[in-house]
Every structure is written in structure tokens, then in C-alpha cells.
Length: 354
Image (cartoon, rainbow, N blue to C red; front, side):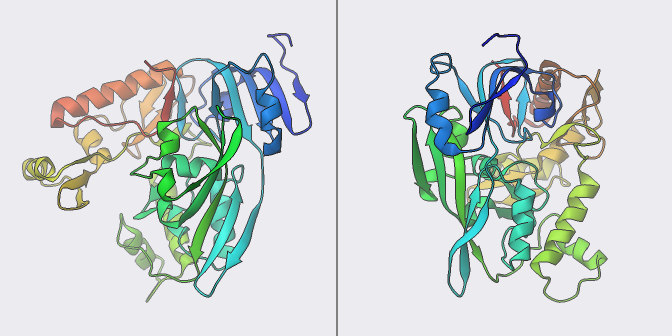
């Protein structure tokens, strides 16, 4: 296959593209390229794909909708995108339903499907961008709820051993915005997940303005899951810039979790700093507040910027390169460290950084 070819070749269970542009495949709209890109429709075709002599020793990278990645340069290996589809209930009792979800499903479609089938739990995770397969990698969370709570198992293809494996919830090693899949990003390609979704549960509405939004919606009494989902959609739409209008990857920095003594000391020095006790030893701080207080909200260097609407969001105002965006992110991190003594961690995976 010629290296300058842009033609896609269909091999049945997958389509292969050389020298593939990634600009439309990452929500920051960074203009990077991949040596090879495979769109896989049948996971059973993965061994044949990976056994190509030209591919066998290439680095491989799983890419969903590109909403949690920053390319700081071209990728000289194989990018695998799953185009698998399917959501179904595979078992249930009076309290819960077990739902199997193909990795290629859009995450917000999964949330809407669950609500349409009168299942609860995912409503607080409404409007999070990306695919279902990416959700366990990041252990996605929002408004007081994390995916980990509902995971029964995750199915993944081991790119080294060339076989499907199944991981229990404990085997996924979930943590705050973290999992074994994130810590071994070149090892596992998530192909499906199974969730245990309750048919009823106590609403989680005491986090980041959800209760207030429900009051604005004139919802009285115990809200339903669809009503909570609507409140979350309103909050996210109002607070976060739309990637379709201004390219971004959502929250770029994690909320730092610090020893509670240090967190309380910062709170005494800065009384307005939002702080949430995690347990008796650690507390979580608002990264957005730290960034804004350090003077970076709305900052801009060329086309690389920090959103004026939300200080956690790194944005591309036009033609910023990945390297330029990462340089600004590094400047924000260093500024917050100098001001507060806290080093922020990026939430997306940065491909190509040292």
C-alpha cells in the first residue's frame, strides 16, 4: 500500500485508511495524521487486522470520538476506531436490569436509551461526549455520579495477546477519572460493557447546582430520572462551550485530590475555594476555581485558549496546533502551581508529549 494513498480499503469486517487525517476525529480539531486508521465493524476481525505484517509491530491506539485526547503531533502507528453498535437488556429482576452495550455506541445515546427503558442511574451523566467504549477508560463522572457504580463487567481485546478478555468491576481498578485501561492505554481495546442499571433509586441532586436547576424548571417533590437528565443537559449546555461551535475536549484538568490538612489550609487562605471532603484523609478542590483565581480564565495565545465560559476548558479558536494547545495547558498548570502549590493533572490523554 502506497504511503501517500488516501483511499479507504474495505476488508469486510474493517476498513483501512492510510495517512489518515485526524482533524475531524478529535473534538479539539487538531490537524494531525495517523499512518494507518482502521474502522472496525466486527470485533472478530481484529486478529486478522493486527496480523498484517506491516501492522504487527506498529504501536496501536484506540480512538472513539476523540473527545478526550490531544494530539501534539502526528501518530506513526495504527489507530483503531470501533464502529460496532448495539444496546440490549440481557437479564433483569425486580430491581435491576443488566444492559450490554457495544463500544461504538455514542454515550449520550446510551443514556437516552436507558431513560426510554425506564432505567435509572445514568441521568447525571447526560451529554458527556464520546463513545461507550471510552467511558470506562476515564471512569466518566459528573454531578455526583461515576460510571463505576453501575459496571458489571468490561470486555476488551488484548492488543498484545490477541484475545478477548473480561474484567469484573474490581478488575477494572477504577479510581477518580482513572482505570486500568487508562494506565495501560496501549494494551486493551474496550469492545463492550455490561451495566447493572436500577429500575428505581434515590435521585442524586445535591451537586453543582442540580437542585437549583430543578427548582428553576419548577420541579416539585422527588424528580424523575428524565427530569434530572434535563436539568443536567441545561447546566452543561449553559456552562460548557459546544465543541461543534468552538473546538474543545471538555474539562481538560482534573479536580485535584489532596491531603485534607493541605486542602483545609488552602481553604483558610482562600475562603471562597470550593472544597469537598472525600474521606477523613483527602479532599477534592475545584480546578476551575484555582485556574480562574490564578488569572487564566479566558486566556489566549494565538488560537489556543482557555474558555471564557468555563476555566476548565481548553479551546481551539481556529487553527491552533496540538503543541500550541499543550504549551498553554502547561503554562496554566505552572501558574496554578506557583500561586497555590497545586499541580493540576490533565484529564485527556496527550499523544506525543514528552
